Image (cartoon, rainbow, N blue to C red; front, side, top):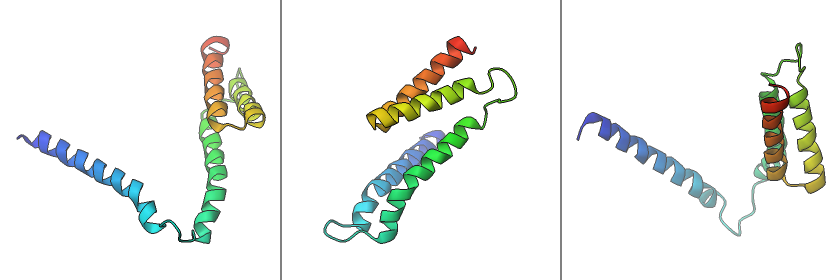
Length: 111
């Protein structure tokens, strides 16, 4: 065995271990029948909104609002995501369709 194969094997083993730990740790920390701690419930309610806010900031950080098209593709796509989410209430559909709409805009309209 050469050194590259050993490194690759160690890398795969570490990735497997990390995946197993992250999948089973919640079941060990919060077994069925035991009340979930209040801070975990709080995080479950607040983190989705914080994550969406972070994604919006991340997605808009590269937009150029001082030159044509003045962020039109970004704002139109955000509007599509908001409208779809209000209409359907499904994050996957909203984000997926908003992303597809944005890609169509930048590839065809604002290229």
